[in-house]
Length: 159
Image (cartoon, rainbow, N blue to C red; front, side, top):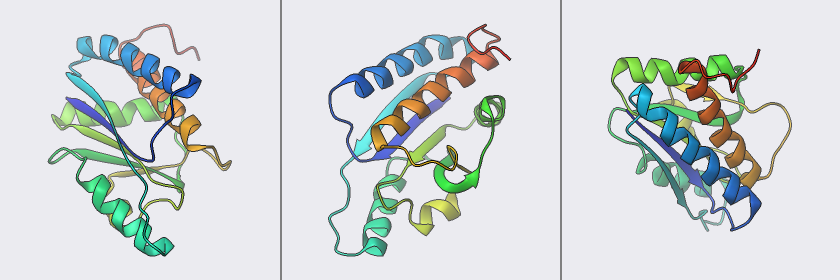
Protein backbone atom coordinates (compact mmCIF):
# COMPACT_ATOMS: atom_id res chain seq x y z
CA UNK A 1 0.00 0.00 0.00
CA UNK A 2 1.16 3.48 -0.87
CA UNK A 3 0.01 6.62 0.93
CA UNK A 4 0.14 9.91 -0.97
CA UNK A 5 -0.28 13.27 0.73
CA UNK A 6 -1.29 15.62 -2.07
CA UNK A 7 -1.35 19.32 -1.24
CA UNK A 8 -2.04 22.54 -3.05
CA UNK A 9 0.43 25.09 -1.74
CA UNK A 10 4.05 24.74 -0.94
CA UNK A 11 5.34 24.54 2.60
CA UNK A 12 8.28 26.83 3.29
CA UNK A 13 11.49 25.65 4.93
CA UNK A 14 11.22 25.98 8.68
CA UNK A 15 9.89 24.24 11.76
CA UNK A 16 6.63 23.11 10.12
CA UNK A 17 8.47 21.51 7.20
CA UNK A 18 10.82 19.82 9.66
CA UNK A 19 7.88 18.41 11.63
CA UNK A 20 6.20 17.12 8.46
CA UNK A 21 9.44 15.43 7.39
CA UNK A 22 9.92 13.92 10.86
CA UNK A 23 6.39 12.50 11.11
CA UNK A 24 6.48 11.11 7.57
CA UNK A 25 9.89 9.54 8.22
CA UNK A 26 8.54 7.91 11.38
CA UNK A 27 5.48 6.78 9.42
CA UNK A 28 7.61 5.18 6.74
CA UNK A 29 9.52 3.22 9.36
CA UNK A 30 6.53 1.88 11.27
CA UNK A 31 4.48 1.50 8.10
CA UNK A 32 6.78 -1.17 6.67
CA UNK A 33 5.57 -3.67 9.27
CA UNK A 34 1.98 -2.90 8.24
CA UNK A 35 2.48 -3.29 4.49
CA UNK A 36 2.83 0.41 3.74
CA UNK A 37 5.48 0.38 1.04
CA UNK A 38 5.71 4.13 0.35
CA UNK A 39 4.57 7.43 1.76
CA UNK A 40 4.93 10.32 -0.65
CA UNK A 41 4.37 14.00 -0.04
CA UNK A 42 3.47 15.77 -3.29
CA UNK A 43 2.84 19.49 -3.33
CA UNK A 44 1.81 21.73 -6.16
CA UNK A 45 1.57 25.49 -6.51
CA UNK A 46 -1.73 27.28 -6.00
CA UNK A 47 -3.77 28.23 -9.05
CA UNK A 48 -3.45 31.80 -10.32
CA UNK A 49 -6.87 31.85 -12.03
CA UNK A 50 -8.98 34.99 -11.57
CA UNK A 51 -12.01 33.63 -9.70
CA UNK A 52 -12.46 31.31 -6.75
CA UNK A 53 -14.42 28.78 -8.81
CA UNK A 54 -11.75 28.77 -11.53
CA UNK A 55 -8.98 28.30 -8.94
CA UNK A 56 -10.81 25.46 -7.24
CA UNK A 57 -11.51 23.74 -10.56
CA UNK A 58 -7.88 24.00 -11.69
CA UNK A 59 -6.59 22.79 -8.33
CA UNK A 60 -9.01 19.84 -8.45
CA UNK A 61 -7.43 18.81 -11.76
CA UNK A 62 -3.97 19.22 -10.26
CA UNK A 63 -4.85 17.07 -7.24
CA UNK A 64 -6.50 14.43 -9.45
CA UNK A 65 -3.14 14.02 -11.18
CA UNK A 66 -1.51 13.15 -7.85
CA UNK A 67 -3.92 10.35 -6.93
CA UNK A 68 -2.72 6.80 -7.68
CA UNK A 69 -5.09 4.77 -9.83
CA UNK A 70 -8.01 3.25 -7.85
CA UNK A 71 -6.78 4.82 -4.60
CA UNK A 72 -9.02 5.50 -1.64
CA UNK A 73 -9.37 9.29 -1.52
CA UNK A 74 -9.65 11.21 1.72
CA UNK A 75 -10.20 14.94 1.23
CA UNK A 76 -9.77 17.41 4.06
CA UNK A 77 -12.62 19.93 4.04
CA UNK A 78 -14.12 22.16 6.71
CA UNK A 79 -17.56 20.61 6.14
CA UNK A 80 -16.42 17.01 6.50
CA UNK A 81 -16.86 14.50 9.27
CA UNK A 82 -14.72 14.85 12.40
CA UNK A 83 -13.37 11.39 13.21
CA UNK A 84 -11.14 10.80 16.19
CA UNK A 85 -7.66 9.35 15.69
CA UNK A 86 -8.89 5.76 16.00
CA UNK A 87 -11.45 6.50 13.29
CA UNK A 88 -8.74 8.02 11.10
CA UNK A 89 -6.64 4.87 11.63
CA UNK A 90 -9.66 2.85 10.50
CA UNK A 91 -9.68 4.74 7.18
CA UNK A 92 -6.05 3.72 6.64
CA UNK A 93 -6.82 0.15 7.68
CA UNK A 94 -9.80 -0.10 5.32
CA UNK A 95 -7.67 1.05 2.39
CA UNK A 96 -4.90 -1.35 3.35
CA UNK A 97 -7.29 -4.28 3.72
CA UNK A 98 -8.84 -3.52 0.34
CA UNK A 99 -5.41 -3.67 -1.30
CA UNK A 100 -5.75 -0.10 -2.53
CA UNK A 101 -3.44 2.87 -2.17
CA UNK A 102 -4.62 5.94 -0.27
CA UNK A 103 -4.51 9.62 -1.19
CA UNK A 104 -4.94 12.32 1.46
CA UNK A 105 -5.76 15.61 -0.24
CA UNK A 106 -5.37 19.15 1.09
CA UNK A 107 -6.81 21.91 -1.05
CA UNK A 108 -5.63 25.46 -1.51
CA UNK A 109 -6.77 28.56 0.39
CA UNK A 110 -10.20 28.45 -1.27
CA UNK A 111 -10.80 24.79 -0.40
CA UNK A 112 -11.52 21.89 -2.71
CA UNK A 113 -13.37 22.00 -5.98
CA UNK A 114 -16.54 19.92 -6.25
CA UNK A 115 -14.74 17.34 -8.42
CA UNK A 116 -12.47 16.41 -5.52
CA UNK A 117 -15.31 16.24 -3.00
CA UNK A 118 -17.47 14.09 -5.31
CA UNK A 119 -14.64 11.62 -5.95
CA UNK A 120 -13.58 11.40 -2.29
CA UNK A 121 -14.37 8.23 -0.39
CA UNK A 122 -14.07 10.21 2.85
CA UNK A 123 -14.39 13.94 3.51
CA UNK A 124 -12.81 14.85 6.83
CA UNK A 125 -12.57 18.08 8.81
CA UNK A 126 -9.79 18.92 11.22
CA UNK A 127 -12.36 20.71 13.34
CA UNK A 128 -14.24 23.95 13.24
CA UNK A 129 -11.19 26.18 13.60
CA UNK A 130 -9.15 27.43 10.66
CA UNK A 131 -5.46 26.54 10.53
CA UNK A 132 -2.61 27.86 8.40
CA UNK A 133 -1.73 25.51 5.55
CA UNK A 134 1.68 24.58 6.99
CA UNK A 135 0.15 23.66 10.33
CA UNK A 136 -2.57 21.60 8.62
CA UNK A 137 0.19 19.68 6.84
CA UNK A 138 1.87 19.00 10.17
CA UNK A 139 -1.43 17.77 11.63
CA UNK A 140 -2.09 15.45 8.68
CA UNK A 141 1.44 14.04 8.87
CA UNK A 142 1.12 13.48 12.61
CA UNK A 143 -2.24 11.74 12.16
CA UNK A 144 -0.75 9.40 9.57
CA UNK A 145 1.93 8.48 12.08
CA UNK A 146 -0.59 8.19 14.91
CA UNK A 147 -2.91 6.09 12.75
CA UNK A 148 -0.12 3.69 11.84
CA UNK A 149 0.98 3.40 15.48
CA UNK A 150 -2.62 2.59 16.44
CA UNK A 151 -2.73 -0.16 13.80
CA UNK A 152 0.66 -1.48 14.98
CA UNK A 153 -0.50 -1.37 18.62
CA UNK A 154 2.44 0.88 19.43
CA UNK A 155 2.11 2.85 22.70
CA UNK A 156 2.41 6.30 21.01
CA UNK A 157 -1.38 6.71 21.06
CA UNK A 158 -2.65 6.59 24.61
CA UNK A 159 -6.35 6.51 25.35
